[in-house]
Amino acid sequence: MFRSLRTIHKWAGLISSLILMTIAVTGFFLAVKGKVNWMRPPVVPATEVTDFKTVVSPGVAMEIAFAQNLADLKDPSDVDRVDYRPKDNTFKVLSKEGYHEVQVDGSTGQVLQVATRNDSLMEDIHDLSFFAEWTHEWLLPSVAVILFMLSTSGG
Image (tube, rainbow, N blue to C red):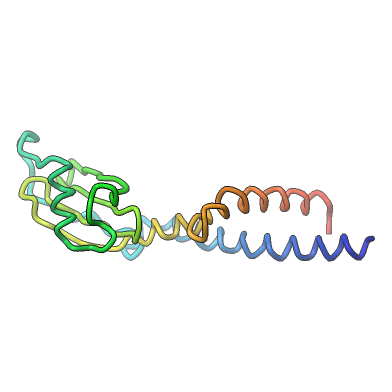
């Protein structure tokens, strides 16, 4: 019986350790994402805005993003969110899939940058949703329980 418990303990610890290492590495990258441009594209400042009545609507910014012919950003159902940065007068249109971002000038509607958001990829790996939805909903909490049991059982 003790041999079986040791084997279970060993495998539970090994699998949990691999998941923890993944969470630790991606957590490091998420912690430094603001300092590393390849993780999250920097905001490109647009035309200075003097009157916010002249700023294009989020719908127009999305249409401009759709015109970039990105496979994962074709229509409103592909959009995860649209952020507006008043300080920079820049819209950021982010795709749900493919981790794309299109930055649009809030005044002229000009495309400022098309880039990949590696921080979104890291977030999905970090919470295990990258692999499958069930890994996020079931495996991650299970690992927490297993780690608690391992830490209280000794060994």
